[in-house]
Image (cartoon, rainbow, N blue to C red):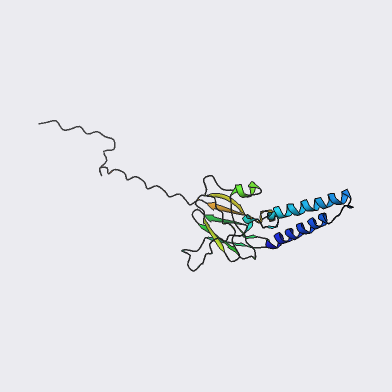
Length: 205
C-alpha cells in the first residue's frame, strides 16, 4: 500500500513538471494530453482502495479442533480439498442429533455454510424448515469445524470462496425412531367373571 502511494506521488509530480515546463510554444493538444495525465495521477492518488485486497476475503480461521481433547468423535468427517472432489465425501447421511466435522487438508482456506443469503446461487443452500443455519467462516489449512444437526431433513451447503468451483455438499439427516408410548395400565378387575349375568340379591328371610 505504501509503495502504491509513493508511486502515485512521484507520477503526479512528474506530470506536473511536464505541464509547467511546456513553455509558450506548447500546442493546445499537448497541454490537453498533459492535463489528462494530471487528472489520471490525481485519481490514482485519491483511490488507494484499488490496490488493496478486499477485507472480507481475508481468512478468519474457525476453531482448530483437537481430536484428543474433543468430548466425543463426530459421526462423520468431511475432508475439504483444493482439487475435486473438494468435499469428500460430497454426500452423506447421519442420524438426527449427530455431528459432522469438516477438516481442511488443502493449502488454501475453505468453508462450509448453508446460508442462502451469502450464496451467489441460493439454490446451492438448502435446509429443512426451522433448522439452524451454520457457517464455518474461512477455515485455514489444518483447521476444522463442527456442526450438530438437530433437525431431520436434507441439507445443501457450499464453500464461500469456491462456490463457483462447484464446491457443494449435501447431508441427509434421518429422524430418530419414535419411542412407543407406554400403555396405560388397565384397572384391576375381579378375578371371577360373571359372563354378563346379573345376580340379584337374596331376599331377606
